[in-house]
Every structure is written in C-alpha cells, then in structure tokens.
Length: 339
Image 1 (cartoon, helix red, strand yellow):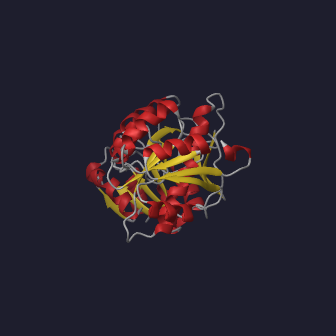
Image 2: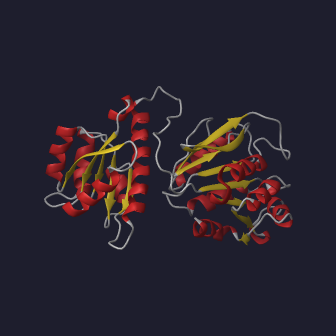
Image 3: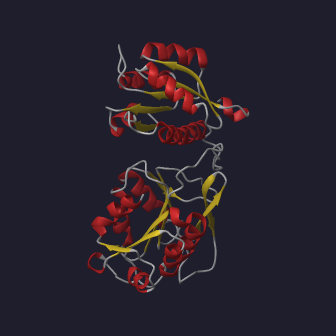
C-alpha cells in the first residue's frame, strides 16, 4: 500500500452520480494523508480503474448501472481483496458487511453538511486501511498506529461493573450500534476469564469486542475489555485515544479497577465522555465517576430495581457522580442520546 512507505492513502470513489463523485473528491482530497486517484460511475469502469490505479481503498455506491454494487463487491473481493467502504442510501449495514465490505456509511442527504460527512468518511478510510494492513501481516502483533487525521468527534464511552455485570454489560453493549464511539470496559473478573468474556461479547454484539492490549489504538466500532490482572487506562495524544494496560496494586480493592479507568477517562476525554456504572458490590468506580462528572462527562448509574447488587451505582449516586439513573434496559438508549 502506498502510504506505508510515506505516501498518501490512495482512494477510488465509485458512485452512480458524477456530481457526487466530484464533490466527494474535492472534500476528501483536503484531508491529511489522502489522495483521490480516480472516480467511476459503474462497476465495469471501477474494475478498470482498480487494475490501472491500484488504489489502497475504494468507496462504493450500491445503486450502480449494469451491475449493482453489492453484486460487484461479491465478485470483486475474491479476485482483488481491496478494502471497501460502502456509501449508499439504500443498502443496509448487514448486507454490505456480508458482501465483504470493511465498513458502511449512509450517503448524505442533500441538506446534510458535506464537510462533516467527508470527515467521518476520512476517519473510516484511515481505520479500514490500517485494518487491511494488519490482516495482511498476521505475524506482527504490535498495535498498528494509523496515520494522523482530524479527529473532529473524540467521543468515548466508559463502562464499569462487578457482581452481575457480565449479563448487564451484554445487555448494554447489544443495544449500541456498530459504528459507535470507542468503548472501554472494566468488569471485575479473574485473569483468563476476561478474554473469554470479550470473545463472547464479540460474537453477540454489533461492534468489535476484544481484551485490551497495551498500546491498542481506539476507533469507532471498537470495544476494549480490561484484562483480569491489569489496570486499563485511557490515554490521549495527537493521534487520538489509546489504551494503557499494566499490572498494578489494587485500587478500591480491585485490579482492574473501575476507579482507575474512570479517572483516566476524566483526564483524557473530559466532557467528550459518557460513562455508565452498573451492578456491583462495593464502591469501585464511584470516585472516578464523580471526577468524570466534575470534568463535564455525562454519567449514568444503573437503578436499584434492576441491579443484582445496588452497591457501586448507589455509592456513585450518593457521592454526586451520577447525572442520571436508569434501568438496565434503558442505559444503551441513554448513552446514545448523549453521543
């Protein structure tokens, strides 16, 4: 891929409207590390451009003449495994992903701001190209750092739970869409079990879920679960958010500790964070949630009636760290309203 050696990410835009191609080309070309090398308005033209230009990634409309985009995608991927982001007003996320797309975006309406749409698409381009490189280098376990890009929406979601939390977390995460802001989770659980828990969530939830590894870069659609013997902290630099995972002394009686996670989220994300503290015994997370609220984050506590143990959410509420109490069934919606 071209940008690996210092070049830009090369993009091919495929859409049935030449006007939309021109507008999108103009806006994407202004993004750091991106170069639009071509456009096409049907599948056959796109195939020729792929052969001629060897783009790093392609955006693909599904409403194409002669061959629709989904059928083209199904035929393309076995021959040319290029990362594709479907951009369409008709096809669903599930249909696009089943056909082999890396990601999906709904095409903007005429009244939607094209600048905001282009910025979100650029962020997906960086992520998908990074994913493609990672898949092609399976022996390299080091976290891949994507190229710099304008992070215009640095939202993050933080969740903490203990007793009864595995089922509660599953309920919350299954109600959150695949393209959500990054999520960081602490569930009190022994080493080894956290990976199995993350794998289970990954199979059931819309977003990618995995056990956190030190240095993991966070991006939309990714949920990281703290390992059972390491504190998980949210860190931040000019590239965006990343995870710090390290063995340490117990905090509030636990490692990993919800207080450690929430405190780091308060410091790194401030008012860009949304957090929920779920069922659990004791007080872990209460002080961190109070700090988050003081920093402008929106904080949610599971209510007494739906908790297995109304301990951690109760202490957080009594400390003044909870903006809103909600039943377990309403926490996903409460999070997404704030996002």
